[in-house]
Amino acid sequence: MSDEVQRAVAALREGGLIGLPTETVYGLGADASNELAVRRIFAVKGRPSNHPLIVHVASLEVARHWAHSWPNEAEILANAFWPGPLTLIVERSALASDAVTGGQDTVGLRVPDHPLALEVLTLFGGGVAAPSANRFGRVSPTTAKHVRDELGGDVELVLDGGACRVGVESTIVDVSGASPRILRPGGVPKEAVERSLGRAVPLATAVTDVRAPGLLESHYAPRAGLWLVTASELPSELAKRLATGAKVAVVAPSDVTVPEGVVRFQVPLDDAGYARALYATLREVDERGLDVVLAVPPPESGVGLAVVDRLRRASAPRGR
Ligand code: TXA
Ligand code: MG
Image (cartoon, rainbow, N blue to C red; front, side, top):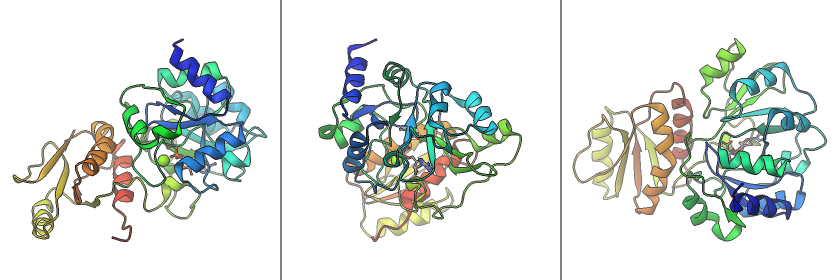
């Protein structure tokens, strides 16, 4: 057990906030049983307080304490994907306060697959409430540096667990109702969830539930304006943007060619590689002061579904 992990757990016990590495994105963690600490998360993120947080735990056994009931689907999916990039929405037990659930009767639970996160959660023993460690509506962090740059002054410490292996947030599956649905596509492919349950699991339609901010139309957004284009539309779209004098970036898989003079961010062709590179790329676009991003999305299969989802939300108009 490293000193850093012990300091992180001490900070949690004292009601402090920590930067917590996970395999998806970095979290802004607090003791989920400490209402004051949980409220600090909302204050630091600038997040509306009725938006629920995910409670991170060390194991399936601990997760069950946070649930009032544990449906069969929860058991199947937890056994298949935990530790891993899957969040289960279940009916809450008395452990889950209104502060954590935004007043809803359900709670989101996840066992992350990252050695440092698991050490912290095991030593801590309880639940750690952790949204992504970014300001509300902005790009999620995938390195410790991203967290320090954005929230450094507001956290006790940031554990450095390296660059996130998955790169987009967990898949959220709501198993609290009559039939399971996916509230947010993420690191576990929809196809894999369906294979495990042996049935189709539909995606919940966006904006019907504003309490899942990850489902808001505009989210995960860089400062630059972002547009989704196909590889064949790219040349004409580029010409149009460049004619306005804007500083234009192209985010595209390595098989797409781009004219000289345009800032090119090359992302891997495969869905998992694209996911891993996505957020760091959008941050770099902003750091370099570019105005416009034209993004060529990956195919919508596997983790590609989550990448396309995030690109769509990042591209939603925000009054510009
Ligand atoms: O991969 C992840 O899930 C990362 C890492 C840190 O674990 N966390 C994350 O948290 O993405 P956050 O707060 O940025 O997004 C959590 C999403 C939100 O859209 C929230 O509304 C939804 O989970 N959520 C949490 N509890 C819920 C509940 N009881 N019912 C419906 N949605 C819920
Ligand atoms: Mg988030």
